[in-house]
Image 1 (cartoon, rainbow, N blue to C red):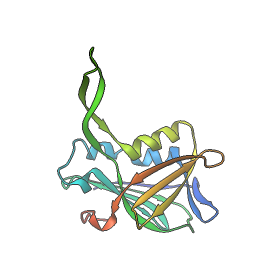
Image 2 (cartoon, rainbow, N blue to C red):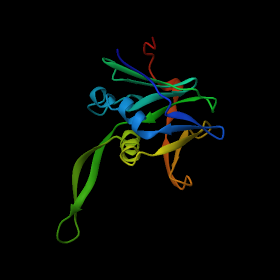
Image 3 (tube, rainbow, N blue to C red):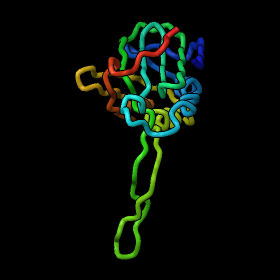
Length: 165
């Protein structure tokens, strides 16, 4: 299993909520693109396990290769685990032909990673909130936390057993 362990003062609290510095998180997450190269027929393998606790941990697997990342920080915020969407591949409308007919094409997206990359480019901090009933992860950013994104997640119990040592 490939491992990445970072000690970072760039994570903390705003109120009682977990605050994250996007550039540090993006650097820790970049290697998952090597694990998730194609769409899996098992939906949970298109997700990574995220654990907010005493540290921030990510686990990613394709059942052959595993990757884990841990960012050590002093968190007293909410503790939770969920599977965030990190890979999507499908058909999208790429344009329109004359007569208004849609032109379709294949597209690969990395929803959570792409959003964190965007925040990292702007060197932003963000807050995470998690609703365990709806399995929704909210990412709030901007000076007044006015920018919001929501990610529909999967229950952490769905994630395959991987070595966490």
